[in-house]
Length: 287
Image 1: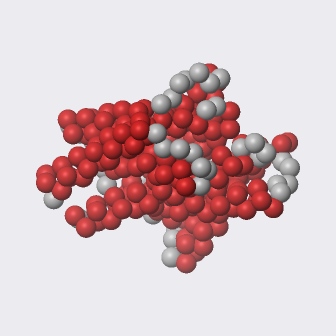
Image 2: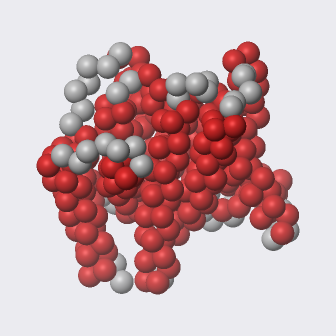
């Protein structure tokens, strides 16, 4: 069990890194590609990979969907809604404002896990989550002077994503990771495909490459995140998503040429401190 939890933490960190890379490519295409087209490509790669894995492992796809009941549909629907809201916010508001609001998702995971899954809250979980949220605020220095609609979308994205991740944890005993990802990707691809028809323009070769990279890194992040939430309690593993703030800052510096301020470094240190706090607590008191 101890090794499994450690593996889940490592996968969550890789997932956060993958989603941070994905966000860079989303930002690079936001000016020329519509939100629904971005969402379509974000899920397309995941759909084909998940379908191949379900077929290879001979998973009873329809049987697992029935076993997952409303939880798997809730995971897929709220996950799709969260992506649409987040991608819209990324393209229409300041990145720091959007990222700060989006990083509040683990807070809602912790709350929903307590309300729906009846997971126990303790001082360490609450304290470390607040420490990481404070670190995200310090690192990003949001001004919140963007258009209020995209900011509201970013906050709603965090809320529905928190609910989606909680629903994902509800599925862990009845549905395999591959089936969860395939169901989510299939629903999201179909809905985004229908909604993008009025706005579709064939992307340039450069943007097509960027969109494919959005899909590739989203697929990596999605598979690893799904596995992590299936083997470790949602309120315990969600905090590691805050590592994405550190990864995003580093990628913005290396790829986009953005500078790292003193507050960015201080915020990253607070986030790492919160993650280390939870990790050490788990190691000492939970195996």
